[in-house]
Amino acid sequence: MKKILIAIIALATISCGTQKTAQDNSTKPVKETVNTPELKKAPEPEKSLAQKVNGHLLGKATKADLMNNPYNSWFNPRYDAYQVDSSIAQEIGTYMKDVDVRLYMGTWCGDSKRETPMFYKLMKEAGVSESKITLITVDRSKSKPVDLVEGYNVVRVPTIIFYRDGQELGRYVERPRESLEKDILKIVSGQEYKHSYQN
Image 1 (tube, helix red, strand yellow):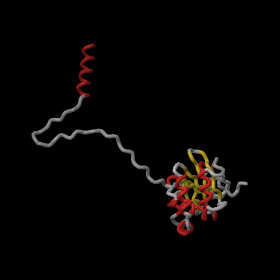
Image 2 (image 1 turned 135 degrees about the vertical axis):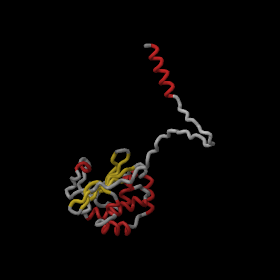
Image 3 (image 1 turned 90 degrees about the horizontal axis):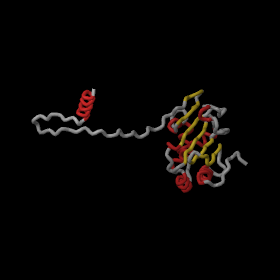
Image 4 (image 1 turned 45 degrees about the horizontal axis):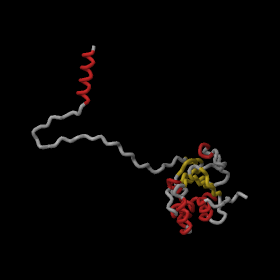
């Protein structure tokens, strides 16, 4: 039994060693195979998961969705026409490095149609990547899609919620108190701020 065990171990040791291939008389060098770890691919741009329900978007969407028919009829002109206060936008950009945003809006809502294009243009001017913004389109009751709305206390749209390290910094609701830029600067810089429906 002991001899069989020794023979098996010897065989395993020989077979686990490096394999050498016979070289022919040519001058070609033998290529050595080196195992390198597979590189991770860069993340793909976020894809829209929104569905059209009665002509309106419902669910997780993207800016690109709003720039296409039929939403581009209101999104693109407002985006192009909005004049961003660039000095405030730069200041906002300095605070947005570690901030994530959830933007709740309805493609059926006049306030959303007004504020959303301006918000996206402001974020672009501030140097904020679109990947930091989660766009969620809701129904008229603001209760669907349930998994994206429940627990976020969205009563009016647009509601733009700013987070740092998972903690809510504040929210911009429906319209500005002063201006879009000034209101958002107050939120992300930690200044005292109450949205339009807070006393």
